[in-house]
Image 1 (cartoon, rainbow, N blue to C red):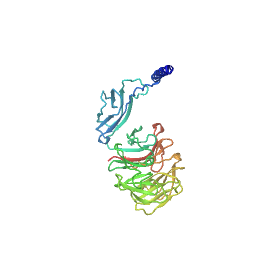
Image 2: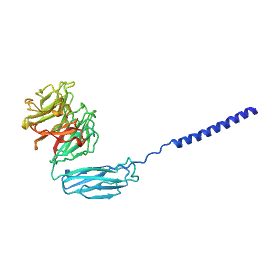
Image 3: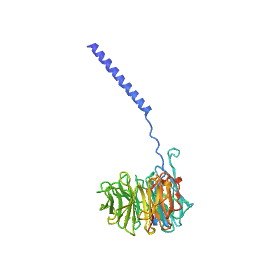
Length: 393
């Protein structure tokens, strides 16, 4: 019995020492391997909203979205600046038209952190009168951007705040209500925005009956129309009451154009696995005709007053022809295989605009196809896709 007790006491003693030593080793190990959390970064960020449709005099709201900043230096692009320790929205009045390079510099409790961003700038444009805007989608940044067409030799690219697009192939403006419609083939949705980029709304998605794979879109009267496999579809401007408007079995209408004089839809057709080509169909669904066969169609637009049809052929470039498909002229072969998905017409200035997605430029030419030139160069770091022009009314 005495031997047994000694053995038990020895075991308990050694187990206790083992547990104690283990705890010490564990505590020491944890103390020496723990990683301290990095200091939080300071990040300068703001967005702007401009009143009065961007026409002078206008009040600009500088909405502060900065993180972990202790002070804010605002510069308004005209020599004026203010300093504040509040992160509230700043309101500033611009009485004169012009392009203003605004900026925000923020202060930080730890300004030397390498991952801080203490400075950001945005250019804003205040206009004298309602202006014409060239809107386009950017496939890299997944945003809508726009340029004021005011003959500025150095046009300023501005952007919507939204960054929730994926593959935006179609775009058109409701000029009466100031609404921009953008299809998103990747997310399978139809978006609407106010003309200034606010109030992005998904008005149709994959849960909408019959809605899928939207590409080109047109606003006609109080309806929107878009192409998807099997035909041309329509809905109210708020996305309600969607329906198949014109059945085009076995084909995939991609980009859409509308001849408002003769009430005819034109559309480009997918070539794989469909039959390709440029087609037209009357607004009542009659007269479906392929007018330019054997091409892989991309962007398309019409100028019915001048009997012009513009279309992109995937492996050849930009074409101009009559509305019946005759007298084809290849006027820009430089965009062959560059996959142009947007064309828009500025009738007042006699210009057409279209993107080169590979070279990342925006091209323009005269309405007769002459004087092809780069309007926005690749140094602008854009990747343009869908495109439309609007004068806000």
